[in-house]
Image (cartoon, rainbow over the protein chains, first blue to last red):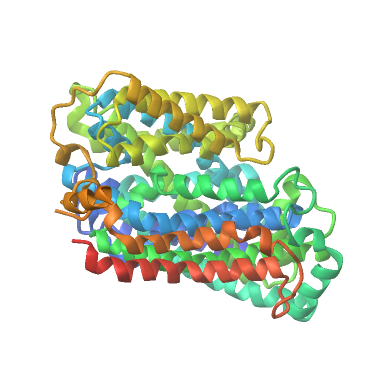
Length: 502
Length: 68
């Protein structure tokens, strides 16, 4: 009975999701160009951007992984909250910078931006391939995450394989047509449900199982104090140094992460992004809920191991709540897979449509069509790999974030420092990416407690600077205004002279 | 034309989250004292999460006059 109700609620909302996603572009015809589809015509206001970017950061990991880490390790999971908060602060500067640069030069993605900065279409194409390798695992993570949730809340009525397929179908169903705007509209539904259900669970679980927060925390302090400080419980080296280095690396990476950048570029003006940087950190308070529920599950459902611990949150919910409510929690978690997945696919599509296929002269005039085709292709390949070779992408996902981090010098330093040469930036990227792969795939992450990606970034910067200074100077004849971000130009020369005189 | 980053002093507020989340960590990595029933590290992380929007707001407030 409960299973039928929960499954029906889920089904209704999935239909609603596709409808909402498609409604977003009603009356706009299909004539809009690539920028209309990829970055919503750069027209989204504070409200939509907030929902969209909060929606991107609150993925299926938040429901499954955050609770699972809370259950297994405790304190180390706080890195998610720390790096997103710090990242939003950095985004106050970087967001408007990338937005105005892209707007001035009509750019639609991070690869487009790099290609323009270094006047090199092939660099754009190469970065697009690299970024796709880093992003595909995330699509698979969302597919499997949603699969697990759907199977659990439907009490197995929907099998795992069907659940994977539904995840793919619903997401592709709207994003191909309505692009970033559709994702923003679906975010509205998602955020209402996420805030609503997590708010409810934050009150319900402690009261239902423990008689209140006092008792829950009391028992945690008394019996599980190992979970309450770094390095946590049996976390295998996730101590303070790891937390600090990971937060630093991820907070720098998240601001240039291709999906974050898609959100930035969708904004109506730079002020929207600045206001957004103030309001987005508030959303992080919600992340404490799954962490706490994961730790609460230690007392209610002890003995979960491996992948089972990812379901720590749902184990608390499925048997104690009425069917329709279980369905709603499931829908909220499913949408937390769908929205990020939609943006991941959209970004891959845009990067290929513009920077890879768009760079071929014969194909250049159908960029939007190619992008839409690549969206479907990216979705299909992630789905097929989920069925056929799940471990390949899981292994790749280890390198995703630390690999993407290696783009930071090329993008941020590139936009602020004219001297940086193409050869320097590429050498740094290759060196950094190689070091990251070597350390991660030989199981040396963290290395002596330090995040391997940050070590790789150090090597990256060192190589970038060395090659730039020692290598040939750039022969790019364009003026600074064409190449650099506005933040690096300006008229601040006199003050500098005074400073140097002292 | 815009103002270069180094003349926008109020952007230093953006370092506040790093101080709260990271620099303070060795001092706050403890269970006791329990504040409002919450173990200290988690209480501190909540404080840091709440301080972040405030810091960005301060950066924004000071930045408006300088930015052009």
